[in-house]
Amino acid sequence: MQSHVEFVKTVICSEEMAVQYLRERNLLDDPEKAVINCDKCGSVMQNKRRLIQGNSVPVMRCPRKGCQIMRSVRHGNSFFHYSDLNNKMNCKLSLCQILDVVYFFLCETPIKYAKTITG
Image (cartoon, rainbow, N blue to C red):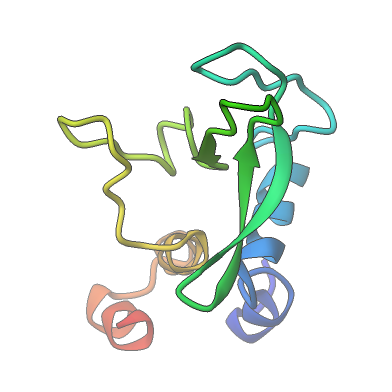
């Protein structure tokens, strides 16, 4: 397993890198390898970027005029996606933050230390 510093530099330095890392390991849907359809109209979704709070975040977007629904790349993934009772994504952690916590869990890092590092 690579060191935490290497993991931060190569995987969780940006949301885009984290998505790429997860797609390469088949942990997130890859629009290049699989057809992902819009939940509303059934059109094939496209990989796009969206500016959210100053960060470029990968999203899936329906190209059909009049629909153009956007959804998170996490949608449908039971590990990285949590929906509340209104079916809205309610996870406050980014993929980078989730991967950081998982890294420390896999390294069996004491919770106190992992909490200090990850905040």
